[in-house]
Image (cartoon, rainbow, N blue to C red; front, side, top):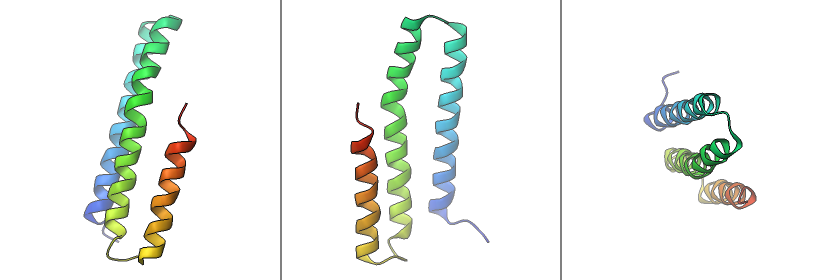
Length: 88
């Protein structure tokens, strides 16, 4: 089965998110202080939800022609609940 363009974009964005997390691990190992760790986590707390939201939006746009409006509404509502549930 050939992945759709939206699925490919979602994979690439997820890969980008993994690379960002691995770079954060590298910096945490390079600068092993609590202060540096907090700074790195602060950056991750901004970038990770933004990329996850973008992945969800790409997925929802990819489903737009295949799912009913009600199902898309539930998916969007679920993504919103995830974002609100992870606010610190």
